[in-house]
Image 1 (tube, helix red, strand yellow):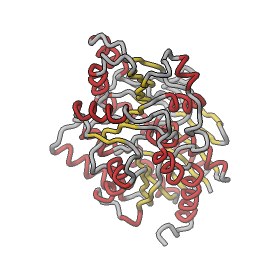
Image 2 (tube, rainbow, N blue to C red; image 1 turned 45 degrees about the vertical axis):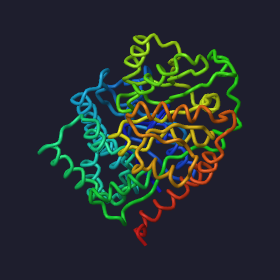
Image 3 (tube, helix red, strand yellow; image 1 turned 135 degrees about the vertical axis):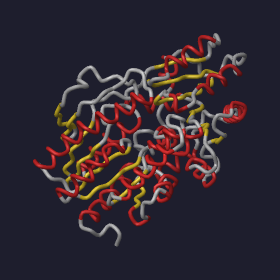
Image 4 (tube, rainbow, N blue to C red; image 1 turned 180 degrees about the vertical axis):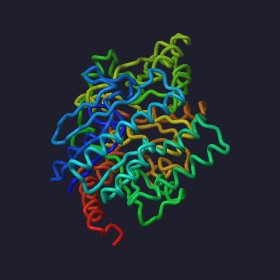
Length: 415
């Protein structure tokens, strides 16, 4: 079976969708599938193209058994609504050309389009009809919902047109998959037939990210004492996370010298947060670069509290990818999410898996953080670890997906 993956993000990006796409492709190859990836050059979350690539050139690679075509695109150094639309549009055009050439040379059984970006959906659907190929839209982020939720686009006539176009495009795919049941319900509300929906969650490498990993050496390297309480946010540092609330929390802990707030990652908002911390003369806030994958288990083990922070609008549309490894590590997490979201439902069904508080509520955030800090964080969160072992193991998830794709190709997906 042959699958063409079409997505903005891919390995060697260390966080988010790129990380999952790279892992998925190599795992699918190990299951005997022929995989081609049509993607952008790595640029996320720094919003800067890796120095080994050019944003204006195509480049072909072969990594971990996967044929990769890197497509040109515009990458803004400062992201605005207009620049982001241009960013998505340029990739849609360049990737469409690459996809068409790939289809002529080596027709796949399935085109697997990852949203974002929805901009690639029209050409994907057109080419699938021309060449007789099955299509899957995999939703990592509902980019339209995120844009409206974050106020990037205002409601009105244009908004109604955008939402109708999104619904029409999604309904045309043979299968629509997503990473959470709440997101699948959202797809159904947008008009996708329930029989087309597929649960394909993000995963953790539960044999690599474990509570048994010793993070004491990294803790010492970063200058923290054994008695310190390290509060960690690791991942993309962007506007949609609403990370100002962490700076506000750090202010409330100024007199407790043992509590350290650590941001690990990159993104468009790093400098803003750094300036906020400096403006408040905070000495308990630290910024570290993204860590290599082999160092991630130690980083997770080092932390006493893990933060999963989002604004209200984003929390409805996105299931944070960082959470899977936190659970696999048996981490003690503070999560901002409403009860109606997937995160809220998981917490309700698994009491103790993490502490949940209302998004964008500084007072509740600080109260929740204090509640986690008084726990014995030197011991792993067994509830979180057991949930990861049962629900997030990469091998089980990929095996189910391969089985579903074989059924789709044979025309038996809905049987």
